[in-house]
Image 1 (cartoon, protein in one colour):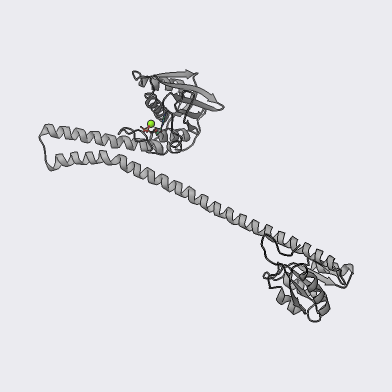
Image 2: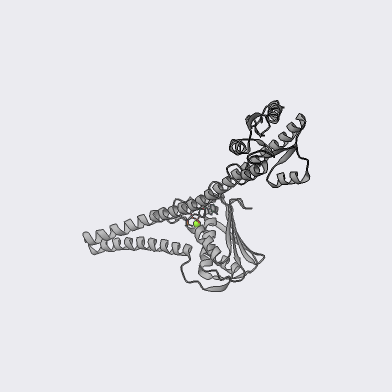
Amino acid sequence: MSATTAAAGIPRRAAVVDDDRLVRQLVRATLEARGYQVLEGESGAAGLRLAREPLDVLLLDLNMPDINGLAVCRAIRGSPAMADVPIMFLTASHDERTVVSCLQAGANDYISKPFAEAILQARVDMVVRAHRAERGRRRALEELSTAYEALKESRADAALNHRLTGLGVLASGLAHEMNSPLGALLSCLDYVVDDPPDPEEAKVALHEARQSAAKIAELVKRMKAIAGTGERRLAFIDLKAQCESISRVFTGQPVRLVVKGDSVVVAADASELHQALMSLVENAVQAAQHASAGRVDLAIGTDGDRGIVTVDDNGPGIDAADLPFIFDPFFTKKRLWTTPGLGLSIARAAAHRHGGDLRIEAHGPLGGARAVFSIPLQATSRPG
Ligand SMILES: Nc1ncnc2c1ncn2[C@@H]1O[C@H](COP(=O)(O)OP(=O)(O)OP(=O)(O)O)[C@@H](O)[C@H]1O
Ligand SMILES: [Mg+2]
């Protein structure tokens, strides 16, 4: 077997430090036969110098005239620049205490002189393999922790981007929705103030101005509903009675509304709850109008400590591509002036303020979308 790693293709490098030239020659010949590049040093000082080279193993004589091997070994282990190199002692001593001192000084292994070539090769190979494996493990760990840090950073960036994008969508949606009624309002006022018409025409213009102002007021009311800035008063409300009263609003529409289930009483702000459920039923009715026999089912029930209202329709359902965006304020697929795309935002914000939730499924049992509105049976004191 050649002493080059197949993966890295880098020749293994060894250094032998011994004041005995014959020992150095023997080690060199033995390791070169295994494909090692071998450097030589004849003193402790040379050992310290060689330890700064990129080495796979340093073979170190124990007794040298200038600095003995133990002191060289300790100096190497104490220096961050060299500490990593594997060290093997070459010792003529078989004394247990000497072996223990070598290992305590930081040696990876030792070999007694005189040595058989095959044993030297095998022991050196073992130390080199173990060291390379350890280095590989350490590098993999470092790469893993770098990758983990990068992932953490990119997640933080993604969360920030998501919030900034949400803010941008909200701002541009609001600007878009305000723009036309505000433009209409201003031009009506300009007309009346700059070029006073006769009283009848002025009345028509002011009437239009009032309608535009009302649209802006409605938009502000809806934004406030999302923000939950109004005063909240909790009352005991029967979800079933609430759903029946909402479904009566749609009497006369070409959609059949059915309310099922028992009475379930929750503690909620009546106006917020009404607005939330109304938004869901409005969506369902509008979707069911696309079916030949439109149908909307409202089912009242409980799940643990929560009251549940499930709204199903037999409309077209929701495209999978739209599903991630339907709760974004101003997201709408309805090209009507009256639908700014705030219904689901309002409904979910109300659910959350009461400690509940709103879930939308693209396709429910009637084929159209399914909305599942949940609210705790007992009041929670979550601030708005
Ligand atoms: N039951 C449903 N069936 C099909 N699509 C739905 C349903 N409910 C919601 N959607 C989709 O989700 C979008 C967002 O709904 P949301 O209620 O927030 O806004 P909107 O209905 O468009 O406008 P607004 O409720 O403000 O009048 C809708 O435009 C529609 O595309
Ligand atoms: Mg809606």
